[in-house]
Image 1 (cartoon, one colour):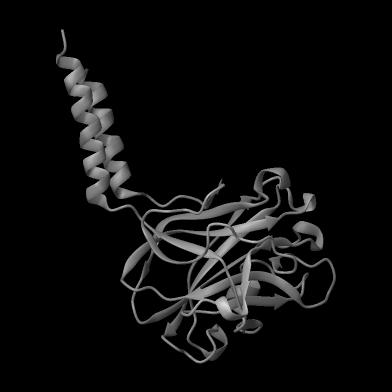
Image 2 (image 1 turned 90 degrees about the horizontal axis):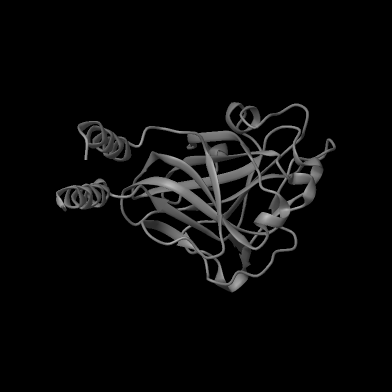
Length: 252
């Protein structure tokens, strides 16, 4: 193995450990995400939803534009991604730009889980990533990977919201799996935001003005929050690969 190759491998390992911030990345999976799970409200066989989704309205009427859930964590961690289950996605949403926001909503049981009460702090907002074609995303888990830039603490309420960038999706909803009534999530609430199109954008109405957030207590979005892989684990994997390369080099 040449010195150049060895140097390149060391650089790759260092980059993996550092995890420099990158743009929002969307991926799909047939099965529920596992590994490094911080918090989740999910099941292995979600039912297809009929009326709960995110969209950008085509008219000046208040509609569910952003959709998500609030949650708590049992131990401090650095969040890497949030996954939701998509039951339906109209063709009009194909390739349209989507975004995700993650909020710190204050101390546990902070009134109404909403920035309206003055406790909200936007931790991250990433947008501009294209949504999938409908044939590739229906009945799939979709992971929003924001590259491990968010530290979460115990004793705090958090909430995520997913939506389309302004002027996208033509009033069609991307349906997320929602559990209702007796099987709701104990540590959070179904969370959404209503707004009018034209006057607001993905960044504008969710950050600049504090109104329009709402919660429901009889339903919750199915979700999985995952942490950044532990640096020690990444180092072990990297050194294992380096050892194999050195072993191959020593063979006659």
